[in-house]
Image 1 (tube, rainbow, N blue to C red):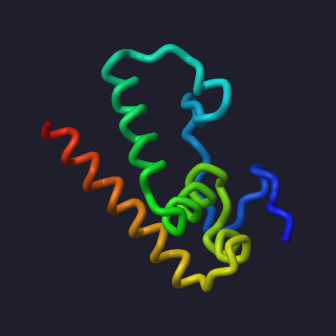
Image 2: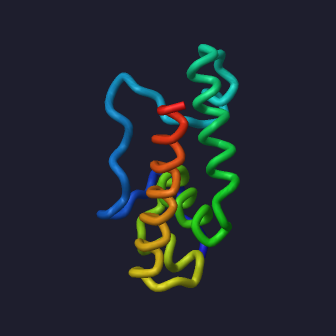
Length: 104
């Protein structure tokens, strides 16, 4: 299956960014950020990279690439319930790590 263009969003795709905000892409990745924001960004990228591939791949395809859950499932050869579960588990792991980082 060829992956859809980012502009082609299915019915269960995440909503587009609100007006007046910018999506993270190659151009915003190089914008200067405050030290605190830069630390958070670095922390989140490291935590994302630390996720096992079976959790990281569905999360990146869903949240960064904008594929629907069904498209992620098809691209990775997973069932829809397995895809949803992996995305949820990845988000929960990132949330726990972020909570710990905020407390430190």
